[in-house]
Length: 73
Image (tube, rainbow, N blue to C red; front, side):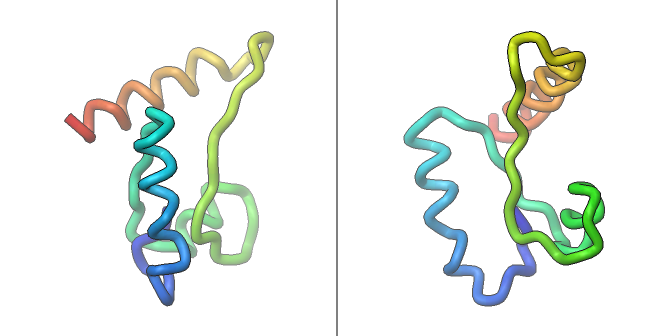
């Protein structure tokens, strides 16, 4: 989620949902940077990372999830 979202209240319900469902999350400083990380030219205020069991990216996504969880501790 982008910390520079205006107004921030439009996404403040997401951390509550994530915590209720044991889903790790992070705030990043810029919605522009989040958009670039998502591969689009527009600003993005929130995104999610999902995986399939047969995905080639599954190990990389798991490493990212573990790193985010360490930030929360």
